[in-house]
Image (cartoon, rainbow, N blue to C red; front, side, top):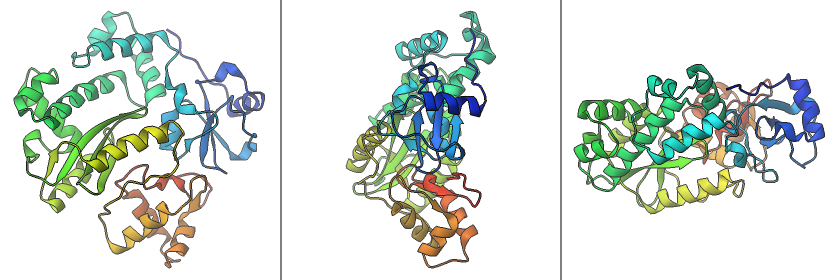
Length: 330
């Protein structure tokens, strides 16, 4: 299996100007002047070369802080055109709790390094990481539906209780038994086009939203558990609304969110997050500009730290902030 290799950025810019269909779904452009990312076949007016950064996948664009274009819907391009990737995804969909390993992938005739790069390029994580996340998702869903830990372990395809508890703790920072049936906060798992996300909310507000593979997630959940006195499994109205609005966002049908947010931080940190929420969709802001907005013009570095401490991804749009060099940094 041979991966598609992208040319240099100047060649990609020429392809963008010509709306070259050969690059559709294989390359994407982030436009710094608008904060959006597009397919190279997008019919919108073409940006200047100096405002363009090129990426191999929508997940890279989102990580860099760009939001999907409403005209060309670049998130729809995430359906892989590589037959090996499609085959493995089909196998994973048909048997989500199957215990994949490198040996089992190799036994299908696939080169491990090629498969690893293909999945990283398309989804931002490796196939084995994706398979592990799917298994944990099954366990998470079982716990949310009131299953005992041992039953959730079996539902997720883990033969060993210790292995299930360890894998679960590695992802969310605590063992399944640490979640409380009587807690006011509820945690749920969302499957998005960029991968799984974990959200925590009570009956009125969203408290946390983070991608499941982010290193900061365990620490964020631990802090929230201590502050709230516990977290349980299940869903609430804010969680259901978050899931629906995220789907619309990733489909390019929504730019602003209506979910009420519970902000956990100092007065200064909260003021930065509120200023971020006030940045209109399609606009970008600098750290210095945010510092001016909250009346602390000399606190640019503190604003940057507050931006990095955001634990409600996407809905608090830290990706709309650019550094002094003009690059998106959120």
